[in-house]
Structure formats: structure tokens, C-alpha cells
Length: 600
Image (tube, rainbow, N blue to C red; front, side):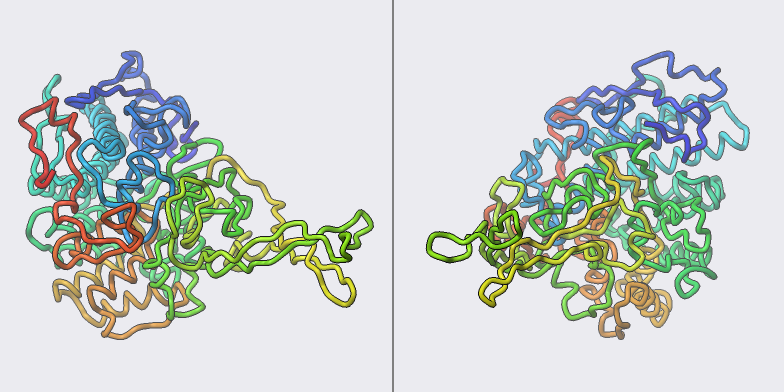
């Protein structure tokens, strides 16, 4: 694997292999030859590790992990895959249909402090923080402009990992490059972590320590300020004090930098679906399409150079399903795991809006008709049985794939639910007409016998374009559309900013998708939450949105399929403390002064 094409990192070597002590998480490089700061390419190469710690499982390829975690293979422990799991599977957007250890408890919101997935996320985040800390330690004496800018990038990447720790766990293990050698992490409260992150990101953004126009694959000013805006959006959850106006001001800064191009001169990409396909790098920071660089913060993937069983490879392979007549080839994907279904609640958000809303164009919904296929002879005529009737080759019963997932069977073809798809490994040109799944289907064939047509071949897809084991689609983390909707939400909750502008921004996002505009009646908590879900599903934001809007747990929570129990199709309420995940038992056992989150 090699990401120098995105990082301009000279001779790229995935150099800083890290090992972890499960207890105090005091991670150190395991090869002294890889911290040779006299190497002229050292800074660029080791910064590449800060990026690959998020995109790749490990320095030895997709089957190797930077941080070895008991109970998880390298693919499952990939950074973005773990973040996706904890932010999406426990929500009203999707269900992981396989009864895998650990994941079924995330889906059912029944986890405990020994859950292997939760533990894996904590260790993976701390492992990445250690990599960034090591880079900052080894470049501390460099004062040239290029290295100082790279150090700012590493600080933002580290902040992203600390943000995820704060968001998921509240209480955090904390250590930086400024701590003395041999120091152990200390535990910071949610308020302390919020304050540190705000100070860290504000310093980088307001002092312009990071490039406004970064190289492709690198984080820049938009990404840093977008992360700061997301932190402030959730300030009430993290610190106990709402900061709607401060968040809105950060959104205005970002929006102002993107005016003048793209959809309605908003900076948004002209086509929504193009943001999630194989050549979406043009919309990334540093991408070629400067007028539509909608992806403010994201990570580059490549089928040849940046391989991982996390990121878009995981999202595409998990969501496509041949049982929904969606073979993997349609999406240019070499794998077809068929293990994610969309919830009924997610599908209902698109009902009655408009047939033109493209944001669910890749879904497959509805009822597959029951029927029979009949046998033919080599001459193409029907085979006739001894009773003079056409011979049946196969038949199937009607199966309902329209709404509700019907049960955990432990099989790849569990029935029910929507195939909720958003990412593809096909190019924009292949997708230019929208609805990739519908453009290459050949019709069924029939043979007439005694004046009656008998179906002898099923409908089939002509999949004559390449598929690859890994995806070249890049992973958006924060998009400009999210920023527009943040502005609107700040007005709804904090009554700050311009109300007419807030509605205009919400409708801007809807118009780009092809949905009709709405009025002030939709400027409500439910209205903005539904719109954020329609726009941002599969983008690792839903759990955080539900928690912030008091819809995940507590007295005003909403209920969805399997919430509260993997055996309850209707769902039930969960305890308020479930809005945060537990600190892993092994962490507290190793450092008894660390406290567990309440309720665990």
C-alpha cells in the first residue's frame, strides 16, 4: 500500500509500526530505525503514517493492524470501520443483520463494558494519537515553514481522534507530545476534553497555521474549522453549555470561503451522487474541482495504493445485496457481504417527499414478485412433462423487501429491510444518468406455448465493467452540506443568526438533491433531524445527532427496530446512560484511578 500519490511524501514507507499495552496504552514505535530524524524524508514519511493510521489497518497491508486487539481481525479493527460501527449500527438508519459477537449488542443497544468492538475503538483511537504524538515529538525542533504546516496537520488529525473519544466515551485517556518521556495517560473529563479541543483547533484555525488550499489527501483550513464547528455544535453534550452562536459563526466562515461556484454558487457539488463514487477525489480538499470542493475533511482511498477493509470498501460491500437483485458488479465491488439493511424508519424519511430526490436513488425497495421459471430444450422450445404441461425449472415465493427487517437468521440472505446504498466504486461517467442500479438490466425472456407466454429466463444484469477487491472511492468525514445544515440547526435550537437564511440553507441542500423546498413549519427539531439523516446517512453522524437532540436516550428518546433488544423487532426504550459508551474494563483495571462512566 502506498499513499504518497496523495501526500507527496517522497519515498513512502509505512514506517512507524506501533504496539500497544492494553492497560495504560503507552504506545511507542517498535523499530528504532524508523525514528531516524536525520533521514531527509523523515518528516513527510512519518506524517503519512498519521494519515494511514486512519485509512489503513496497518503497515503490512489490509491484513495487518497497527494496534493488535484481542477478538478483532485487522479488517474489523480498521479505524473508520470502527467509527462507522459505533455511530451507525446503534441508530434508526440501519441494522447489521449478522449475529456477530459484539456487533449485535451495538445494533440492539445492549452493550456492556467488555464489548470487543467498543474496546477496539478505544484502543485504535489511542494508538492513532500515539502515532501523531510521536511525529510531533520527532519534529519539535524543526522551525521551517513546511514542517510547521505538517505539524499543524498532525495536530488536526490527533484532534480528530480525541474528538471521537470525547464524542463516544466522554471521559478520555489523555497524553500529548508535551508530556515527559515515560508519562502515562491521565483521564480527562468530558468538559476538560472539550476545552482542550476548542483551544487546540482555535489556535490552528485563527492563527492560520494550516493551508487554506492543501494538497490532495491532506487536511486544510476547512477541515480544521469544520471539526471545530462540529465540536461547538455538540457543546451542550460535551461541556454542559450550549454554544449555538459560536458554532454558527464558524459555519459562516466556511460558507464564505466557498461562495461563487458549484450548485447555485453555494460551493456544493452540482450532483449529490457524484460525491460518493470512484472519482470523488475532485471534491476533496486539494481536488481538481476547486469550485465544488464540498468535502471539507476526508480521506483518500485507492484500490491499488490505499487498501483497507474499512472505509468505502467496507461500506459498499456491506450494503450491496444480491438478495435485493443488487449484485456487487453493479457497484464495481469485488465483495458482496450483504450484512447491512436500512431500517423502516430510515425509508420513511423519503416517503412522500418527491420522486426526484436522488438521495435514495441507489436503494432497492419494493416487493419482488413471486413466480416460476420454465425449462427449455436445446432447440429453445419448452420442455413438456408426461402430463403435457410445461416443465417448471424453479419457482419462488413473494418476499417483502420493502420496509421491515424480518429477523436475525445468521445467514447472508436474511430477508427484509431495505438495501440502503450510498457509496459505489463506479465512476461519475458510468453514473451520470443517476440510479446506477437500474441502467444495465436485460429483460426476462419468454417462450409461447399454446398461445400462452412462459417465462424461461429471469431478468439479469449485464455487468461488463471492472470490479476490484478494494474501493477507490474516498471517504468524506465533513461536507459543506453538513455545514449549511449546522447553521440551520443552530438557528432552530439557539434562535441565533438569520432565520430566513437558515431556511434558505436547508432548502439549498434539498434543491440540490431534487427535493421540493419547505417552509418554516419544517424548522423544528424533527425537521432538521430528518433532513440531516436524508443528506448524511452512512456518513457516521447519526448517533451524535440523536444524542444532541435528546432522541437517543432519556425521557424524549425515540424508538426504532431492535433498539433495546436484538430479539425485539419493534424496539424499546433504553437507559439514559447509554448515550455514552463505557470506558473499557481493561483500561480501568490497568489504571485504577480512572473512573467508569455512570451506569456501567
